[in-house]
Image 1 (cartoon, rainbow, N blue to C red):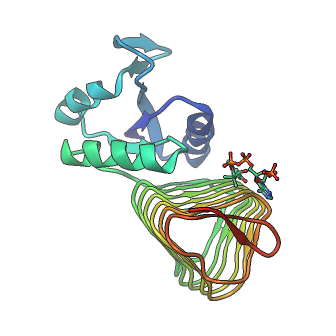
Image 2: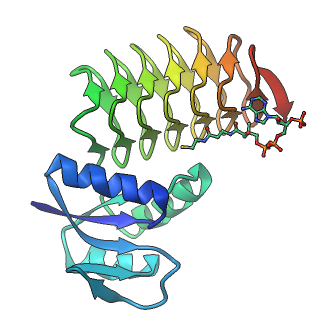
Length: 208
Ligand SMILES: CC(C)(COP(=O)(O)OP(=O)(O)OC[C@H]1O[C@@H](n2cnc3c(N)ncnc32)[C@H](O)[C@@H]1OP(=O)(O)O)[C@@H](O)C(=O)NCCC(=O)NCCS
């Protein structure tokens, strides 16, 4: 199995590690998180601070996945690791339904029960969470999080870093601006600008 290093050890990381085990392609050789100061071994897995990645990049041919749920933090750490020479891989649960014509960027995590339909293009370091639906021809930017049970109908565009809350729905052809947040359960029927938070049915701007 190919070696993989998981960055982050919170709740999201637990799910990502389960996906890696279910996929059966990669073996986790290290889990790095800045809650640790020192490097140690636990159950044959190296545990330590994220700065230890530099040594692992130099000494191993392991790939990386950044398993941090917060979009801003995931972006920041992915960029630092990329500049240090890290190579990222997408991690896709075997019980996700992914069209052969869909494109999934490196570092992206696709969870169980999600559906990614024809000609959807997903950027890098995105999260398609459990049971989310990304319909045909969607364009999903880098560092986006589509939360559990959210439904992006056909031809939706989601800008980089946006967060689509759990159970939210976006009707066809609408655009969600970069780094915007769509609250849980929101129904989006109009385009949403960059850097705003929207809530409600139909969606209204809560804060800019
Ligand atoms: C929209 C959201 C980001 C707002 O968070 P916040 O800024 O901390 O907002 P608050 O909790 O202070 O709520 C502010 C107001 O908005 C309302 N509100 C918050 N979220 C709402 C939602 N999803 N739908 C409708 N109203 C909502 C609150 O009731 C409150 O109303 P009030 O001022 O009349 O009392 C957050 O509530 C949300 O929905 N996040 C998505 C979480 C999610 O799906 N995570 C997935 C993890 S896997």
